[in-house]
Length: 128
Image (cartoon, rainbow, N blue to C red):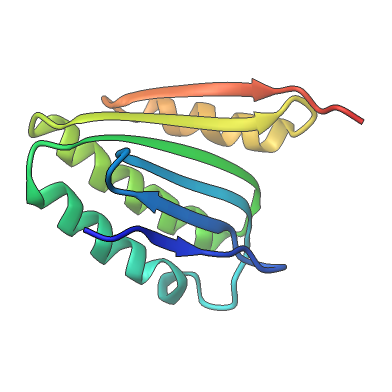
């Protein structure tokens, strides 16, 4: 499979899925006009990747803000990853947030409480 890459915009996160390394990174703010359309290609790509073979996948989520529709899309993606984990895939999700962003910390903690999959909530320091 080829790498899936989308540069960030003012309202959408950077998406970088490297199949050789087994790493998916989503970084930035997520409030595109149509989140399901924005995330559609990622879902298709992720499903193909997970179905292809016994792949390890590490998901690095570093989202500073997301609207309600984006939250649903991210949650759907996490459930897809959890299904793969429950079927035997090696899946790890790392939820990064800046120490000052309490709402994103709480969002990560809420996701973690509902899941079986390895889900780490990681505080990042802000340097100025």
